[in-house]
Length: 103
Figure 1: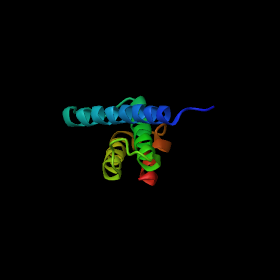
Figure 2 (figure 1 turned 30 degrees about the vertical axis):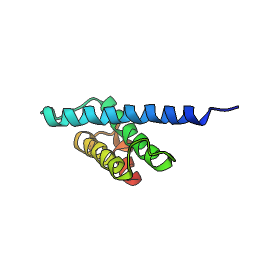
Figure 3 (figure 1 turned 45 degrees about the vertical axis):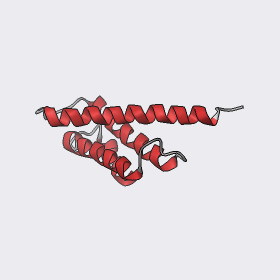
């Protein structure tokens, strides 16, 4: 039987929206905060948001309202957050460079 294609698109849309919401939160934070450190969970969110955004933009027949240029911009922003706050973190090290190779 499997999952119906419209259900797959709905789930992709949900994941994409969640990733975009995280990116917006990170953008708001970057604009308004003066802190120099962030919790490791933030690195995980930035990393997975970049991956979801890029994967959805590249693999979906429907663009789900997000073009490739915007997808790359959002992923680059996530990469910037990873570079800025987690470049010296040994725990986040595997995540810091990964989006760069996907972009």
